[in-house]
Amino acid sequence: MKKIDTFVSTVIGLLGLSFFALIVFVSILGENHRIDFLVKGFFSDLKEGNYTTLCPLLNLENQRSDTCPDRLFLLELALLSRFNLLESDDYSLIISRDHFWLPFVTSGRVDVGIALSEKKKNMFEEWMAQLKNNDRIDRFMTVERQGGAWVITAVHLDSPALAPVMADMAKKLDIGRYVVKSAAGYTLQPIEIDVQNLSHAERRLFEHSLKKLSGGKPVNRP
Image (cartoon, rainbow, N blue to C red; front, side, top):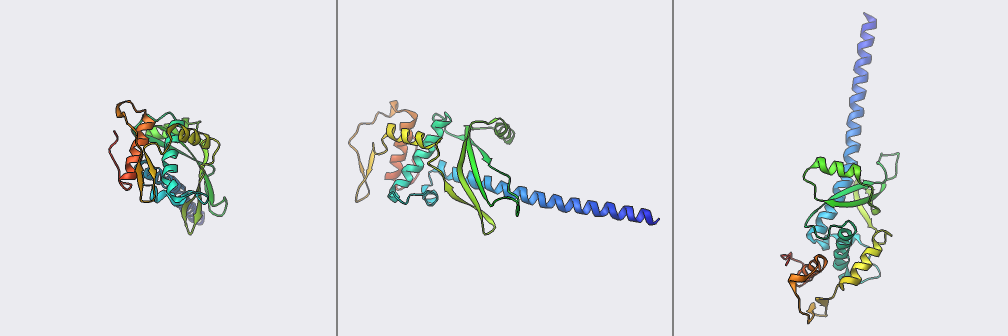
């Protein structure tokens, strides 16, 4: 009888320990997924053109603050170009962390790589795209654990996989083709616009320029 009691106590103890370990694992898994939510929030704002929210995340110490919206616009355009999605109205985001965060074991700093793909219909397709993806921009963003929460501490626009694409896109498009900054606000450039023959990148630039004139409010794409 004593042996049975010992066996039952051992089983109950192991079950309790396993349950506790499961709770800890799920909690840690959730904290790692919070990084993904943070990155998805960044791209959601980027899609919507909420540049005021994102500008503090860019290092613009040696540049005028009014260049930030243009940098973010070029960032999204460069990413779309990099992943052959310029003609797409929407896309899916593939996120890759450089390591799985474990409290007291791994660093509280995580570098995040990203890739864009055609818009997936459901979570299963997104999961399969995550497994198959080998073409990504590593260390696109850095997040750090601060005060028990994850925060974006850097967006690496100088990435070798991204900076040349942004520079090439800026050169091809001429960001001030339609609108230039003036002392009183913005000045329209004297240019004739054939909206029917604009490329996909030029259409996005035209939309971005109109948004400047509207004070940052969304406009319908021509």
